[in-house]
Amino acid sequence: MSEKKKLRVATTSLAGCFGCHMSFLDIDERLFTLLEHVDFDRSPLTDIKTVTPGTDIGIIEGGLCNAENVHVLREFRANCKVLIALGACAINGGLPAQRNSLSLPAIFDEVYHSGFGLTNSLIPNDPELPLVLDQVHPIHEVVKVDYFVPGCPPSGDAIWKVLTDLLAGKEPTLQHGLMHYD
Amino acid sequence: MNPTFTLDGRAIPFLPGQTILQAATAAGVFIPHLCYHPEFKPHGSCKLCTVKVNGRHTASCTMQAAPGMSVESETEEINGERRALTQMLFVEGNHYCPSCEKSGDCQLQATAYHLGMMSPHYDHFFPNRPVDASHPEVLLDFNRCILCSLCVRASRDVDGKNVFALSGRGIDTHLIVNAASGKLADTDFTLADKAAQVCPVGVILKKRKGFAVPIGERTYDKAPIASVAVAGEK
Ligand code: SF4
Ligand code: SF4
Ligand code: FES
Image 1 (cartoon, each protein chain N blue to C red):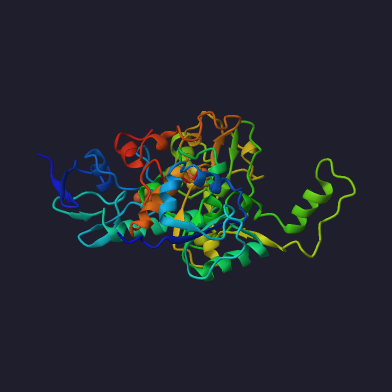
Image 2 (cartoon, protein in one colour):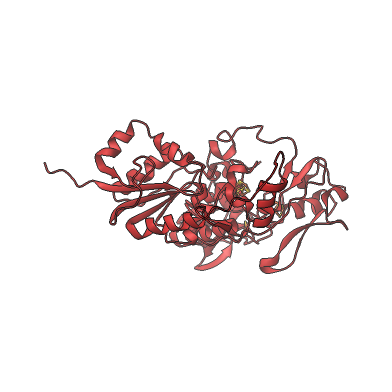
């Protein structure tokens, strides 16, 4: 029997909390089944730093809060055949987007100058630091996204359902109990 | 025998004066809706309950049933339109379900689940809508208002107080509080008002009651909105 070619999967966390990646690990022993079908490319699980061109599936956790997030997202879109937004922050900005009605100077002032317990405060300005965007945006507002997995985080079961639907060549759906925005 | 109309090919009996939505619900068939509430006169504004009657779009919460009508509801076309309306409601406000006290009890969220809404699709408006925390018992978080007018109708028609109103037009429509200051604390609104009970989303919230029921154990966590609604909404 000829071995079926494995799919190449890359993952990243942008303006997220890594909760979606933790939830991904909640598929538990199904990871072994998954590894029969996929190889991991760039991902916090492998520490590979760039996405290999022609990668089959890119999974993005988190929205866009700075210029580096946008750069990484574009790298994923350019090199992945299918892009999946994983979790509330990738889908609508999530809790970080709750800053969107505040101005950046007001936020920096609160966080670095006037906030509780701060002394000798300075706004970090190392050139290595990515520039912060004026508002946090979901990823579909910047690149085309093929599939979405809602939840904060989506449960391991919901992630598993979407991945197995995709591996089976089906349009992913989530029934009652797996579909959650919270 | 009561007269009937057909809904997706099924005969639905109705009583004279009943709307399509009322007759369908009585027959155990769910039609999605947000601004309709069985205790109030229909408002016909959200259009989630849209069906096709003899081929023409109409709001089923305002259209009276008539003998022999042919009504389509559960079609790909109509559910696609309902999903698009729901997505617009999400992007026009600020809906962060993970930090919303109404999550799991929210009809907008549960309707989105019912319609299989996997993403908001559109670009977000991220409007700036400050909350009103002036009242000692109740918080108003306007970020989640879907302008269904249920609080307006409840306060005017049941409480006899006229605490709320919709102001502005089109995309500028917004909920206001009838006080010179615009603040809820400067009205005679109380927790016992009907208007304090009817909001289908997380705008009118009782203070100091946050997360008394854990996420995952709430109304629409236990059963989908289609079965909750036909069993009789609270
Ligand atoms: S009102 Fe409903 S849809 Fe909006 S944030 Fe709250 S739970 Fe989510
Ligand atoms: S506050 Fe609630 S009940 Fe009132 S119009 Fe807005 S969504 Fe409807
Ligand atoms: S429920 Fe009929 S228009 Fe809103």
